[in-house]
Length: 66
Image 1 (cartoon, helix red, strand yellow):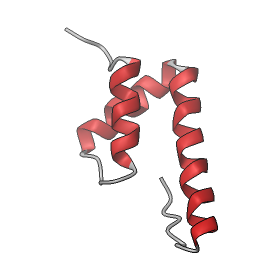
Image 2 (cartoon, rainbow, N blue to C red):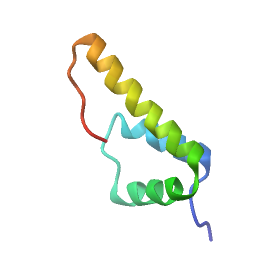
Image 3 (cartoon, rainbow, N blue to C red):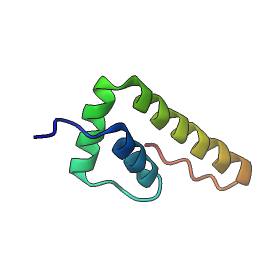
């Protein structure tokens, strides 16, 4: 039985979460992994920052909260 996602799987899900709404189970798995993995938590924060920055530069205004 696997307790949490691998870092590779988390990175994929975080990226997909920028393009689609993640399922409840996926969000729970991410939160569990983020609770124990600072590296993945940082990757998630960096991707959110980049999305907001690019949105502001392009004038898109798509700054959904993640």
